[in-house]
Image 1: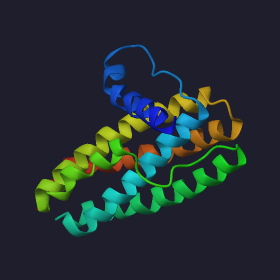
Image 2: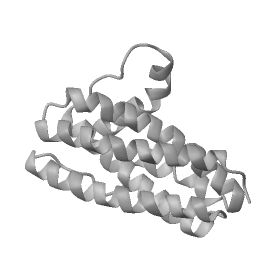
Image 3: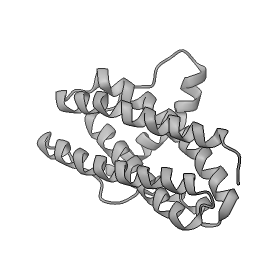
Image 4: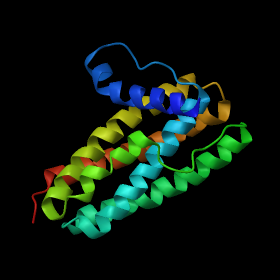
Length: 171
């Protein structure tokens, strides 16, 4: 059942670019699906951020990545507390789909890593913001609704930071 839910969450996340081109909003997630997806995003962002410490060439990319590690690690802990209160479970490790997203980064170093990382952060945070906005109004649990609303400014800061990195020339 968890595998099916994870697959549905992954399919929903992958479909977000299509939704961005069409006026229809993303389908609503159950609270458990939202928790699963957010936990996966937090773990993925933290993992990629840690990789950037060794593989990125630009200091500003490394600094940005460290901010993401800190923010997403903190968010994962907060999510765990909220989920426990709502009798929901939080995944303890990356699912297959999110784990596969790491593989391309393992082969990259320097400016190639920087470029791929920044582009992925823009795409990923754009998708995440859409999901969080939807959940801030549609979540069944009031605490998760509030959490989604309160987390949006941080995700928007991350998106703006990635966009700023894209504008800066490689050194």
